[in-house]
Image (cartoon, rainbow, N blue to C red; front, side):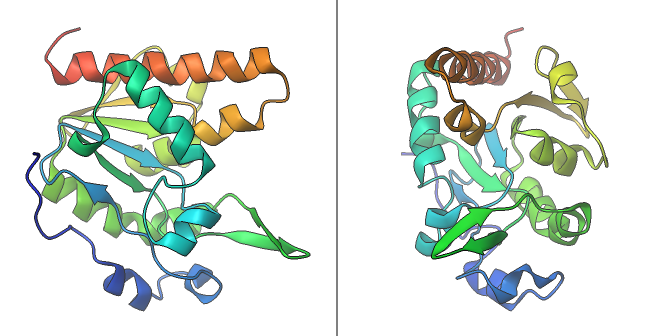
Length: 201
């Protein structure tokens, strides 16, 4: 079993965080979770509705799709560390539904110290940025073009960053072909991350 120890960031700390207004409407903060010294860290955008309710990352529909992609890529979720760039769920109410809203730059920057702490303690060799928001947060840039990053890992502060679609992007595709193509792209990126973690090119 991968080593487990006290997580880098606790839910209690996130629930006390007032660095941005997102805490007001969220159920709770959602810290990262996984292996203490994972070689690969997956960084998403923010918790979704199910993550907000359950308090764990990647447990909703996008998380289930990600589990399928990890399995196809030959990666064991228990040996990874999973987190989000922003730790509280940003949404708007439409009737009784809570619809996802992308976090803004100020919210990404306000949450960056939590991501930095996770990176420092876990110390992964490879970071997989799931979506442009995650890539911006990891690289500390205000804009990132995901398409230019998906085929070439970027070296950043001694680590390699692999960027790909967020699994929710695949879920949003209207046609089966588009959904399958996005899923395949995620799997290929995860396989590339696995090769890099093993020291292969």
